[in-house]
Length: 354
Image 1 (cartoon, rainbow, N blue to C red):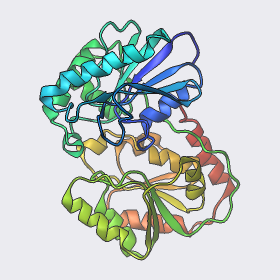
Image 2: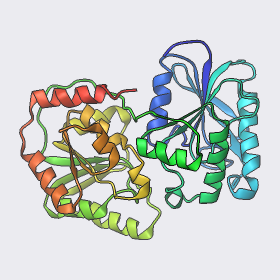
Image 3: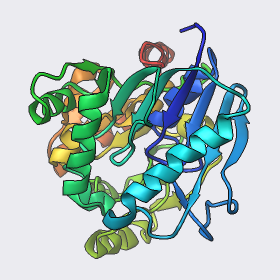
Image 4: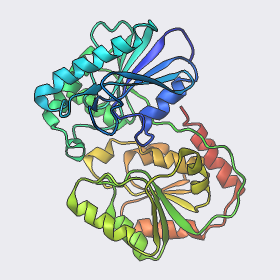
């Protein structure tokens, strides 16, 4: 992609959060043109707010992050309009001297809105079924619906990461055309087959999206399991199951790993797992971790969700039950690393790069 004009990306997650779809795609765009990444408003005196005024920070070549502080609680329904106004005013104020010509304005996340007087192409980029995930995020579904309907009406282009999600958006806003833009990944450098431990690896946030019956079955089979990612669960019952799982002797947990070390962690394992629960939210999702495993040359065992079926690869085994999932992981652990298979998986990941 090339051309004149910058991209304004009004993000649904802060830049410092776990690297997800928005961050990866914005970073890829920055290789071709200027990108202004706009964090969701940060509460004054909170961990993310740098002070009283908007702050611009260059975080990558051609990618600048804007942080706009707001009063604590500004995303509550009564103060929501004020927070949005402050955010849009911050965009105008922080970029006034640079005088950028935004060719494209992207809105991601359940509560983001297009700024008024936007002259560039308006893109509404939907990465998850936010309505189905409202309880998981702790946001009122009614607020999400109103915001999404407004964005669907104003957008020049609507894109969704899965076909199922595109269908749901068209049901929400009949007549809206939705582009299917599958998730991509940042391919890891090709690595020759080296020593790999006989362990499975789980990458990503640890929360209600995971199928804990499957994880418990894998651990109960004595399989060594490496878990990398922060705990973000809200449900006390899920937190208790996480406590029990991570306390097991054959389960190791690293809440944070520097991005540059993730490829090595993955490449030293024997199989990557994507054990997502069969929920409406997950049915519409496209887990990035599956592509990351393939990029590292790993075979994958995943629950039988549409995104895994869409990949249509023999290197992604799909299972519906804890027993079947555990058996598939055990078989993968028993296979010797094969240079040809590793190259096939890495090639598959590169065909799904941004």
